[in-house]
Image (tube, rainbow, N blue to C red; front, side, top):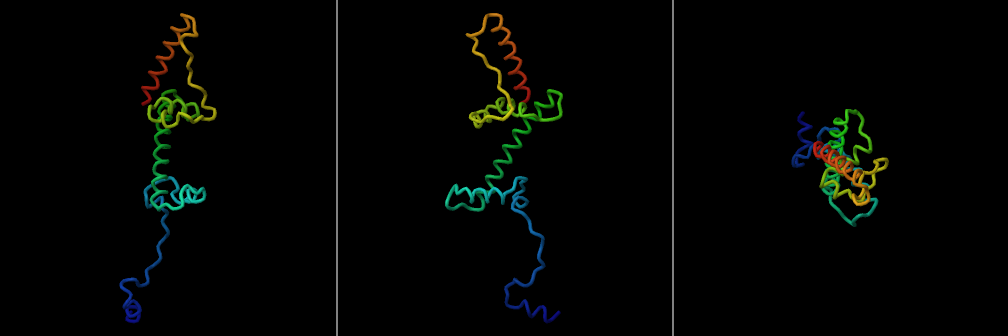
Length: 147
């Protein structure tokens, strides 16, 4: 015991410490998305010459939040339809139904998401115009209930 104390003398508390298990950046930041992988992608694609460690953490947090928001809206829409599985169409309707996400993802095409129906009223006959207006009203009501 005495020789062990002598070996730590003069090191300022930097003696031999038992090595603990490694903890990932994601766990330290409290995220699910992989912080290290996102940082590696940022370095490989050379978005900037230099960036701090916090940049990859912030990017992972933003991506995780957006994913969580989209999946929550799509999941609510899926439950209202009485289904269990989220489809690309549910994601499409969820994104287009939310004002902020619609602005953010307005140029994005979701594969197999379908199109949100819209026909200019001037093109339709009077009967079809009234039917389309009621159908549009029902769709808007459904989208508002999901939010």
